[in-house]
Image (cartoon, rainbow, N blue to C red; front, side, top):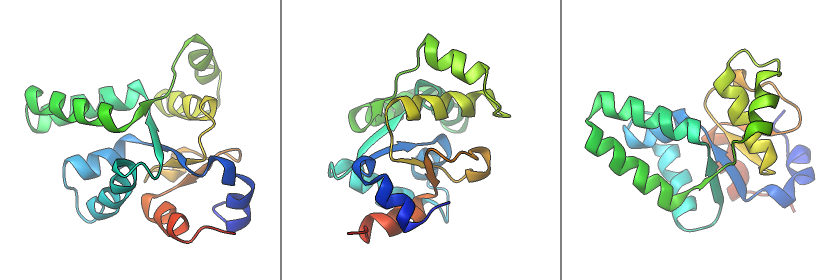
Length: 154
């Protein structure tokens, strides 16, 4: 659950966020009405107010989708830009084993979750909250994160 008390307990990790595929695509593909909150989120990333992480799986998904909707050259340009803004969460044998043995319905989602957890991420930002029913990581939409980020608990 996304509550202020939950945030207080995780305050030390508040500035480390994991950004999921859908949120990045909202920005890159200007998908309304979601692109506005994604743009605000990436403004925080560009200004170094937050440390943004993603995974190799996310970047591969973004490349595939972007290349289909635009072209390969534009897709690679997007990837290069993201690599200047974001850190890449580790995905190794340990993460893959945890993902393979998890109860997640989607294998890629489990990779994302375990790589974010391994990096001690404070917030997992996605519009697909239903895919991440976990209690040890704060999962929120960009809008929820922005509301809390601009009004943090003391």
